[in-house]
Length: 262
Length: 252
Image (tube, rainbow over all chains, first blue to last red; front, side, top):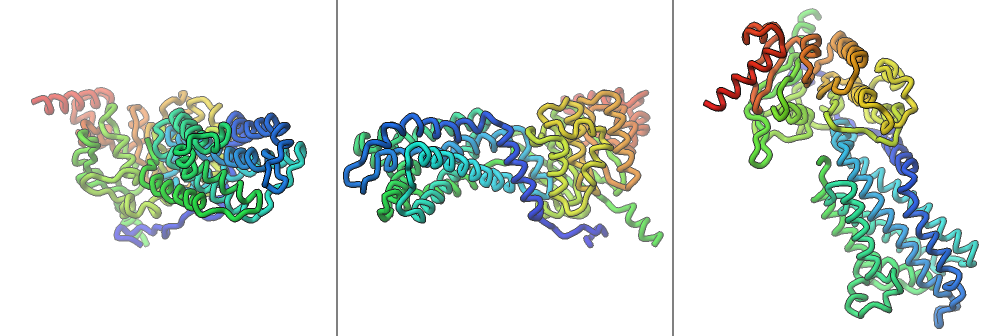
């Protein structure tokens, strides 16, 4: 009872059912927005197929018989899937929700709008898994690629890449005033970190200072971590530290900058 | 028991005291006082920029008062937001739903946020949305979207409802359907705050009207009292006269 005599129930955050419904809603929204699935899922597969024929035949000296495809192309493509989903797709959805007033409407219900952010991360994770599954499936079926030597290290590095890219994506969503701006900022961020991370021809072909700079950004760090895991070498501390820093800095910035309404 | 019910009827459901809200240089609300008794339906009128939506959003706990206080069922909607949102239904102007989800999916999603509430299918029927239940929100007409927006505001069976421009975009039949729904809420003793530009709607549904102008309460009272006090034949004229007087007062 309160001072006014009203019997108001204790505050109760929505339960598991609500979380499930919201995640389901986000997944349906993403699936029904078919065009949005083409780039994160279709493009890496297309690149793998077009580049795979030559790269899978070229054995890299001193890499235990592994091909250029496994050492360079695969890690690049896996990180590309995560980056496209986390840095381009997810922010565009969140910016659209803010623009439409959906986050504000949710803020007026017992469901905090942060539930939508979580549901989007889960949905993005599912998209990533589909994209990665497709990439690995194509690699195995068409080029006989068997996967990383150190699977556990590869999975751990991959999860850290996901966390880093989603954190960067949340910053993109936080600073984007409109959905179009989110796509533009997301794409510029993607091409920026991917270019210095070696997406266009390998980091070894970049000028030394740029290549070194790229190693400390999440794309280059992610590729480097996965390359080591792929050949079974211990992952150096630098890419791990760079990815962890991206998670920390991205999360702090996103929490400070994110607005629920226009 | 009788005494207790009398006390409950006189409870204040919404209390706004000296409420001001400023956005940098602009003052959207300037010392607004408003009391809404439990079970009452109060209409909030005002021209564009009068501060209606800011008032609604502050009552809903979406904006923090710059000065003054707001209480909904005795609770501060900013500080006790989680409790207030469980008993407050809000339909916001220009706030949309998941456009890729169907009508039924949107209503079910919002129902899942509340412990107790309406059965989604029943509410969809009552709002005349049965035939559109499987249509995605992005393909609905403006009127259907408005009905859906009302449905999600009511699905948690709120004790206080705030409706911002309830029947904008609705055809006459749609307006009548929504009005009937509001009358059902009134019969259940739900407190309703209704922001509207439609004078006939306010006259039909509201026991009391508050007119905002320049972020202040320009006049308040029953629709009949407002017409008498302004020497008008209808609420439209009363509204225009109040606006004119307020403008003259500000200019002098």
